[in-house]
Amino acid sequence: MSFTIFYFNPKATAETRAAVQAALPGGWNLLTPSSPGDQSRELAACDFILVADHPITAANLDAAPRLRMIQHQGVGHDNIDLAACQARGIPVAITPEGTSTGVAEHTLLLILALYKKLLVAAGAARQGRWLQWELRAASHELSGKVLGLVGFGRIGQEVARRAAAFNARILYTDPLATAPSDLLAERVATLGQLLERADIVSLHLPLTTQTRHLINARSLAQMRRSALLINTSRGGLVDEAALLEALDSGRLAGAGLDVLAQEPPPGNHPLLQRDDVLITPHISAGTREAFATKMRHAFANMLRHTRGEPLHHCVTALAEAKTLT
Image (tube, rainbow, N blue to C red; front, side, top):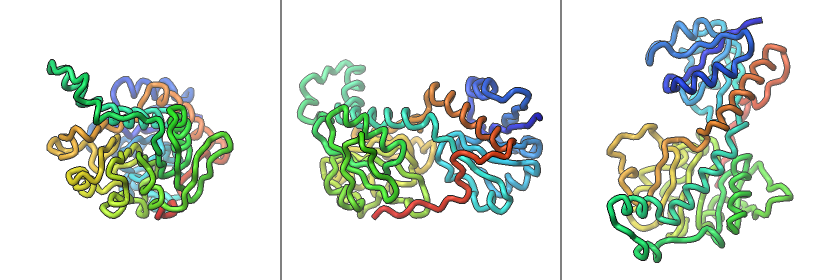
């Protein structure tokens, strides 16, 4: 039986669309946005929606009478109106496969780039300034530092494994997860305890009403003055105004951010202008290898739905994560 999938991603490149097409189950049809605005034609014709970071609203659902299921190609489903999906009986599933490795590697990239002053050193070299000695007093090694992981699911554990290879000490706080036996990591009971001890605080949480602005003026004041903040999860976890104030006042040494509250940010965003902040454009999971893995698992889940089998990673009925305090 043939089904129609709408790849609801107006920002997708031709190469991305070709990769989705190549992974499509045999005999299925693929629709992609025909214009940046109105998608009513595609929604009216689709049986499945495959979505990246585009919002899915109740109005979108109303425009899709044939819709059977929504499959998110990643894990951050905060842009999908889950209540509206539940009301329509439309399951929503995520695709964690393919995400963990890229995000874990990117987390380490941000930490090392900040510690080694990569932005400053590379920028100066391009301008003909060779800072062989000038940066030594301000550069650091990851070895021996305490890495605090806020959230210890799939990605947090992969970060811990990689950081352990750099001889970092691992702390984590998570009300649901426990470190596996092969991973040396210390669990702390509260976010406050982790903030007080960590040289680096790295966020690995979904964005919910409970976790929004989890990192705020109060929590930033609990961190060490020499600490780094790393966020490869969702921009809304961090109060950016409070982060800017902490950096300006010297309360924090630096930040590595792959996500922001507004993406893309305005060109005059103050965090973009700082040498102590490294910002990348939400690319931590955006590798060729990750995308191929995601497509394989996403379409396999849609096929499960057509066979009436239990879905993998269905989030429609999941409760929000417990608050980390």
